Length: 546
Image 1 (tube, rainbow, N blue to C red):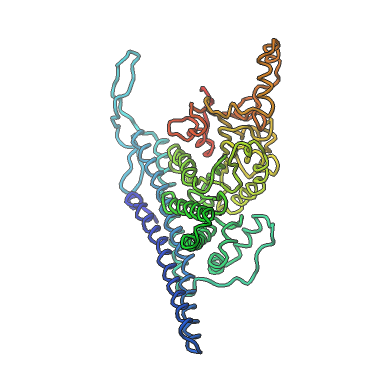
Image 2 (cartoon, rainbow, N blue to C red; image 1 turned 90 degrees about the horizontal axis):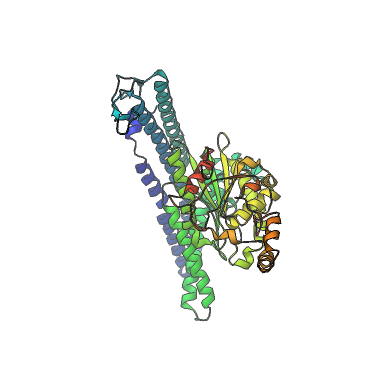
């Protein structure tokens, strides 16, 4: 049982450091595995016969046994990092209780017991109508104040206690696996192609921990992208896969650099992919919050799906879909936007567990001609729909509040997916949107009060008009009928992809943004950041100008 004093003394950063240390062991283990493979290769070139074959088999066996530890190292990293995150949440709840006690005059003893104390003298309080008249009034705690403080203390201790029990149980299972075997080949096959994420989740739940580690170790490319597999397993698989892909690219780079100087384009592609993977790996190593790699592809412009915090264990989950020109090299910067929403959520509700995801799993337009077409957004719809269904299927405990946020062309992706396929979401948010493919909020298959939008007053997206309308307005400007026609124009809020979702006439809800251009919605002093965080949390959002 976690005690009040014990929770105060707990240092989440120490557990975060321990998690990083365990995760960092994957590098040395991989290098040792490669060393064994190199030695086996050298033996084969200079030694033959039965003894040579036996030695080769033994080296291969040792290499496999060592490699089998890799998923467990990442798993240990996850367990410790999640324990640290839940400790931070519990300590935030504890601090909330103590702050409330200070404001209301409740006393909390060293055992965490709340009771009404003697009248306390707070800082001077305004009591008079005349300017500058203050009087220090004593505060006396009432029974309701004591009850509120005691309830928050109980919540904090219960959360810490549950985190402690769960982490101990997961570590105990890993310790047992170290004695009995890390991996075991599963007898059953994979779910049928196209299986719903809920069916994939049921299949995964039927496997033993050793069978899951075997699949992560031997089939990381399939596990890492399979919606319905929990985030922790996908992260383990994708981190191992990322290291393999980086090694392969590094080898290709060495070969291209040493060869004929003709394939400059190929060398640049390899260098760009390496740079993108290195940036992604660097962000994965940073924290807290711990990042979970739920998918990636280094080819072409690159793709990545990364969560800050474990979405399967969070009460609120934000999926952020970025817009035009975003590629693998932009992942750290785009993740910082998701991280700012997450930090603002923590500021508003310090005792809640929230995760924020970057969903960059579509062919993002690189240039304006591509961005003027809905084709790439339409193609992305099924994948975003399936991903959100996977979040619902893999979540532990009560259903999470899911929010999907699209910025710029990303709002076209979100709107099209909601319209054509439906999205597992409790709220849709559009910022800096050129339209979302519909003219009314109810066409997005959610109640209109759950559809939100904001566009900065100086966002250039406001100038993006439907095809042909700009030329029509230029012609009207020279016509003597211009004033009359402008008065009769039925809709002055159409953008490239439909009615402006930030216009009240769209039928959804709006929130304020300061002058921020097209990319400043996440700036710390922009009310839009506060609005996004409140929507994620399900808290009241001030009306624009309110």
